[in-house]
Amino acid sequence: MSLYDLPLRTLTGEQTTLRELAGDGPALIVNVASRCGLTPQYARLERLHEQTPGLTVIGVPCNQFGGQEPGSAEEIATFCSATYGVTFPILDKTEVNGPGRSALFQELTGVLDSEGAAGDVQWNFEKWLVSAQGAPVARFRPMTEPDSPEIVEAVKQLLPAPA
Image (cartoon, rainbow, N blue to C red; front, side, top):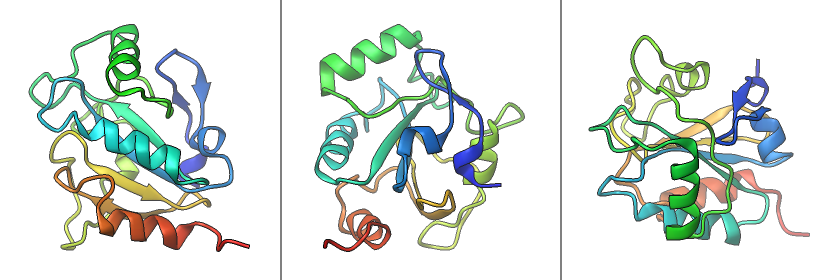
């Protein structure tokens, strides 16, 4: 089964899939939080989403790291929009580790990072690049900025060549 076929829920409570959100292109899935020292990455995520046709950034709020995403769905949506101008899709608040880990993160936590390590999500703003076919292809730890050369290059590898 492709990751793109897993049932998900948006921040507004609508049932969806990654395929419906990302269409025919790759996606960068990011566990996000509103009260984290890394929260300013939202601005770079939005820029990457806007400036990379074919790529969809998808935010996944999580409150498992220091209680840094305590808000309701409405509060999260308002914060992201008003503070960072976020237009990319955001899913419902999700557990990424532990016994309540979502099916999406059961798959994503098996992906190796650049040092060959898999396992639990380390902190907010960890990122996974998923191909247009729904296969996870790369994992980037929280301190890797969304516009870092390694993410930009990995994204370019998944986009169709310009005509």
